[in-house]
Length: 177
Ligand code: AMP
Image (tube, protein in one colour):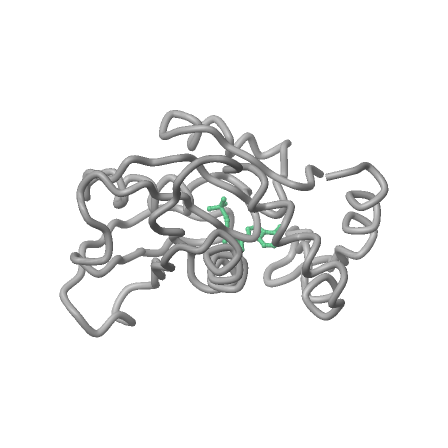
């Protein structure tokens, strides 16, 4: 993606102080989602990272990862798999507990959502400490998928989340702060 487009995207991300807790500078992506041109640029930019590779499934993380992940799956012509918070998926699940930038949580996948050997790309809105993404990647790996990597709209570099996820495959982000 060209520098001008990246600059447009960067300036559309809104900083919200002290949300959802004091001390957190929340990156609000809704101004990007609400703009047709920026939304398209984002999806196309995220899809570029796996250009020329066959992708079977995009796994998107609850909840903003569903938005990016599902759009990305349509763009790539592959399936979408939701990694959901504990207790939300109706069928048999595999789960993992993990630590967040603010709090703790659990993620689950349907146990039949990914077949062994499938080419899987992980997608989420933002990479912070990497706890969420590495939990999802651990689950995906336990299903014997071929992990193509992880793609994020935003990476908060100072939190060094990349160090937690790059062991599973290449890490891509459109914007870094
Ligand atoms: P982490 O596990 O620390 O990498 O946190 C990543 C998840 O938390 C992502 O799914 C984000 O949606 C959310 N998140 C964490 N920190 C922020 C932030 N500063 N602004 C927006 N979302 C965040």
